[in-house]
Length: 416
Ligand code: NAD
Image (cartoon, rainbow, N blue to C red; front, side):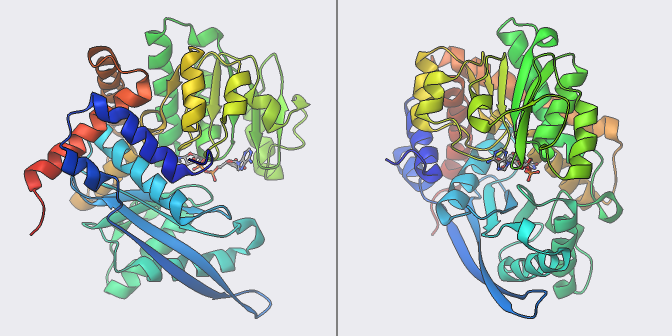
């Protein structure tokens, strides 16, 4: 097995949890295979008049529990295996949160920093056309992920609605408020990470208010996590993004950093600390390490030298299976991605429910529902860890999720 393959990692995580979950062998076999993956080619006109053809994917991993659900990523490192792994992780995440959804993921192989706004819009619309036969409010509901956001969702919703001839807001979630988005969606994933941090600190009987935190990735998830943990009294001592990193032992001024990132479009150049690279950030002696960028950043090499007291997986798949084993041997707890970053899909679900009822909730109601659901999943994971004598929290979370998806398959049976 190659350490860097996310699909192999995801399948190995499933296998590791199998002895701790009651799942029929035939059903388990089924769950190892995504239901379908569509590859699309996407020609667009560049600003200079030339034509460039991009590639995109949409994987629908499983729908036993409800419509497929999962984000769309624009990134040069997108591959079919990565999209399928991410679709699998969505399946386990929606099941662990007990949402009536399956799992999916989409991606376009592109560095959006090389595109103008118009080119990004055209690529988004062409991608939406490419996958439109497989998405829909009752079929498959995309959402934002890396390098996509509310504007991307607005273009997708508009393109899909144009084909239908009437407006269909609930084909995507993570929309701007003016077209059916929900209060609290932009902050939802980071808020879920912060709530999970509180529960984890309580569980391990540690003090969050005096904790030091390092965060890799300062996009949607990383920046909101930093802001909320800072408000809870923790010291954010280091953050990095694709432009660079910054470190200050006494704690960074998160509000000033956010202002800088907005102006300078990146962390690099922030004068509130010393500059730091990813390698050093991942090995800092801190209470919490929050990977909030890409997968496979905590490798065996990093795991051996990691000094954090706890890893909170805000990104999807940041720890390789081999690294996970080392962290387990070294007694460094990892709060798994399918639990830690589930705030986004919870609030996406709430957006979809509000759209289908043509009714809107206030921020207080959305946040309360998010907190209730993710807290319940945390407790269920802890209970499974203790009762099933699982080796770690990831295995416990997977066991709960696998059983839920497995049960749905068993009662539905195999068609025909
Ligand atoms: P984003 O595009 O808003 O931010 C990604 C961040 O990672 C950016 O700051 C980028 O500069 C940084 N980054 C990229 N390459 C890097 C590198 N080599 N070193 C350091 N930083 C680097 O994306 P996001 O929505 O914040 O997603 C981050 C992670 O969280 C992803 O794994 C995503 O799948 C996961 N996630 C996102 C959501 C959501 O609602 N957006 C929900 C669940 C999980």
